[in-house]
Image (tube, rainbow, N blue to C red; front, side, top):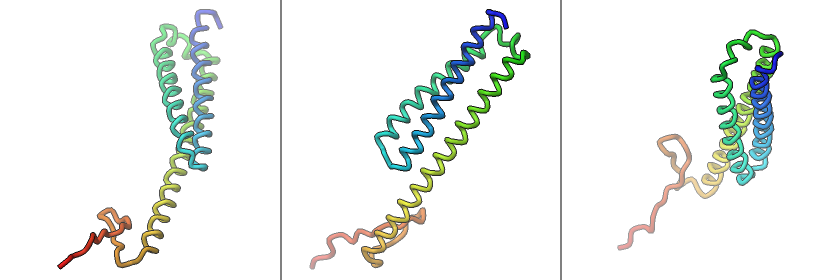
Amino acid sequence: MSTPHSSILTLLNEQEQHLDVLLLLLQKELDAIRTRDVEALKTNTDEKIQILDLVQTTDEQLTSSPELAEVKQQDWFKEHLQRLEDKLAQCKFQNQVNSQSVEQSQLVIERFKTELLQSRGRAGLTYTNKGKAAQVDKGPGIKA
């Protein structure tokens, strides 16, 4: 590999580091979801946005590189690209796991809310147009 291609290699290594950080952040996000640590989730989300911006910027730099067409067919480039695609697939999988965890948490909270409403008395329990349990506010009543 000649030195003119070192800028491509540098960008590929940089992209790999970004994806490693993103995967670590996604794993931390799952821990925060499990522990219901809202502050950690917010901080983690901000960091993820920054890393995703860096991934996009690096990708744009790679795409606009004049020597990209020349190195695309070289084995070292293909191997590096495969590693990046594998890491990206890991990030996507972890993101899907996190999404399912959030959905499960929301279902548990909704079920708990329904049980609480039911325990307050069935007389005031109704359902919204979306099928969710709700308490009817009967107001102060009628005074004659």
